[in-house]
Length: 311
Image (cartoon, rainbow, N blue to C red; front, side, top):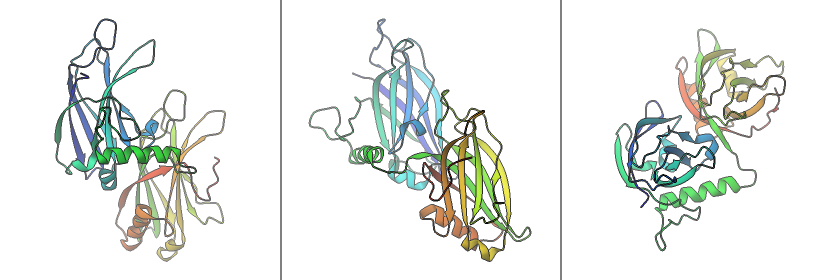
C-alpha cells in the first residue's frame, strides 16, 4: 500500500565509506490533493543522533513512481559501525506550506553487507517503526537487530550524561625521525553537527599536545565555510622526543567559527596512552611504527575530559 523502493548499498572498506544508491520507487502512496506526491529520500544511521547523520536526496515533483538514480555517501564508517549500526531509509513527501509528510521506510542492518560488494534491494516500504521495536503490523516483531538498534538509540538519547555523537574526524599520526617530532594530520570531518541557523557550520579544528606547560602547543586549521563535511588536509608538527610521547595526550577539538560572538564547540576527541578503544590503538600504532603515517577515523563527542571549552 505504501510502495516499493529499489536501492543498492556498498561498503568501501579501504576508504571507510558507505554508498547508498537510491534507484527508484514504484506505487507510492498519494499524499497530495492531486493524487500524487513530491517524494524524496532521507537516510539515518541508528543508533545515532538523527540531526548529525541525516543525508537527504533530491525531490521529484508530482509522481508516485520516481526515478532518482542518486548516490548518498556516509564517510568515516568503520568496521565496528558495520557490525552494530542499522541504516534507516525513509521516503517522504515534500510540502512547501506544511510539514513534510512521511510515506514509508525500510531498515537494513549493515552487518548484512560484505565489504567491497554491492548488494541490491527491492523492498516494500513499511509504516514508521515505533521505538518499542515492534513493526506496524499487529503481532509482528521487527527484525531483532533493528529492534536492538532502535532501543539503543532511544537509550542513548535519554541517558543522563550520555555522550552525544557530533560527527567524525579523520586524523593521521606519524612520528618523523628526520624532523624529531610528531606529525598530526587533520584530513577531513564528516557529518558534523550543524551549529548555525542555515543548517550548516563554519568548522575549523584545533590541536593541543598536553600537558602543555608553556601553552605553545596550539595549532589551528583554516575555517571552511558552510559545510558539515569539510576537507582540511593540513599537517602540524610537534617537536618532541619519541620517548616522551608516551606521557603526552593529543587533544583535537572542532569548532564553528562565528563573527562577533564566541565560537561554538562542535565536538572533540582525545588520543593518548590513557584513551580507550580505537583512540588508544591509533596512538599505540603510531608509537611502535616510526616514520609510518597511520590514518584513522574517530567519533567526535560533545564532552572532552579536562578541556576548556572556550576559544
